[in-house]
Image (cartoon, rainbow, N blue to C red; front, side, top):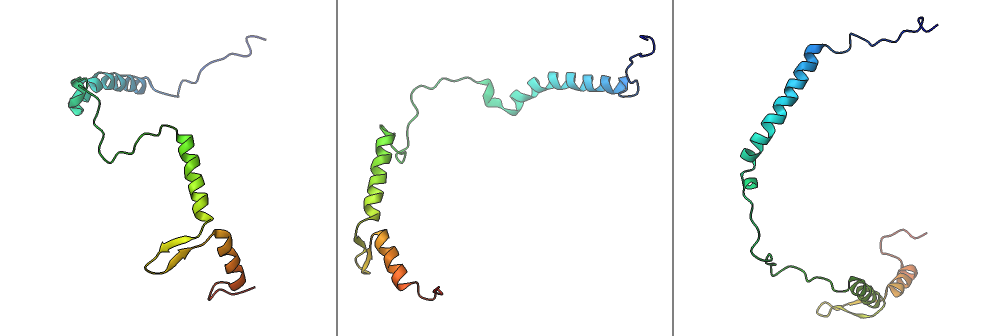
Length: 117
């Protein structure tokens, strides 16, 4: 019974020449790559250590000491701004009103040129 089931491999998959060419190409790639990379990236051959800390440009934002507190203050300021009256542009006579008040006015008057239900 053991003789009736013989295992074998398929002999027509890949030729030995193709395997040899692939192995040769890989060997050439491994040898040529380290030789060409310094030519392509010449600054990679020099190693320098920075003398000091990099200078920050004058327009760089300051680092956040407590980002959670800053975000909370920003949200509180935005909420106060959205719920208060004030001038947007005094010269033009434009004011801002709380969002809830603006919604009520729009519901009562509607938008000009907008079809009403």
